[in-house]
Length: 505
Ligand SMILES: O=C(O)c1cc2cc(O)c(O)cc2[nH]1
Image (spheres, helix red, strand yellow):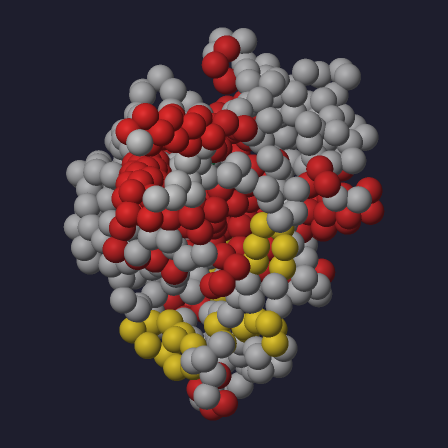
């Protein structure tokens, strides 16, 4: 969540996090070379929805003001917590060389590419994040028992990916002996679902690019909308087959059988007010299609579900929550039926894919511990990007107020650093974020308005043709009467006419 340079006693007390990219004095945010400057943070002050009634009690309110109120604002194509790196889609010393990466279907990668991806994930699970440290206490205890020992810890790149998701969904601690408040979620059940998870993936992808020293590294996706009850990516060359010995475990032929999860001690977090740290505990559990108590989540979404959800026109609808109807966001998230109508018993698309996994990947505080999460979410993001391309929405369709806390357009997404708003991720990816998806989508069928327009044009054409033909016939007859010739008439008429003219004569 915060750069290592900033979580010192001095940094925390100053409320300022503006390091130099070159580690030199008097160069906050690389100001000496014109890269950026240290400025006050604008935190969203618009009202949030009624779901969260505990204002003042949670460190994540008006993120990241509880911890820091000054950060770097970078110039031109520079970005990052110290303006030391390039905006998405650019690379090079001066950040002026375009780099476009392509996210591909994981099933269509070559054997070597699959192996490279699995190995890279495993390396990320074991490599300490070079820049970031996580708080292991809430703000009121973050200076430690003696008031001089900041409670921050190193974390690995992949575990940081897990931790950020956990931190965004964790309950609000209301004090010893009080039940924690669970009606809060800074990354789900609101418009921020699509924007938050988009940035979450970008951050992992970028951390892995740095780790691999390969700016072209791209996360692949899992097309989970294949129907049926088989997890096609659960093979040992990809995300791990099922163990022969235990229905809920991953085969020992897969590297992922060695992975241990973090953030399992929810009881402690909720009763003691502690925070998840980098401590790894038990193996990943996964039993695809195995939830016998809920037959509805024993099958994956169907291809038609994706086609249907792409046709939901409105981005989100009041109350901008998991109860929203006719909302694209609530449909792709999976609280509505694929056609958009809200139904409390329905689980579809993204939610259904999570629940299908039936284990670590189906519980919000743990789900990214199962690396299937990465591929499930790149596909969800691909659908979001296709929706943005087809519907070309104005930024104003994203609610600026009264969304659940964390989900307003101008809210800084929790717990990312440097601050980044939901609005910044509400843009088509190829043009604005430097990546695209190699994917085929069902063709958009005609809308009702288009069908009516086509019918009206067709009717007009038919009327015009009939009119033109009639006019020609009438003109021809008049002409023939005038000239005594019948150039447009058939033989029969000619004979009849000839007979008539003969009898008259
Ligand atoms: O019950 C659901 O609908 C559900 C479970 C689950 C797990 C997860 O990690 C998510 O991100 C969402 C989600 N929804």
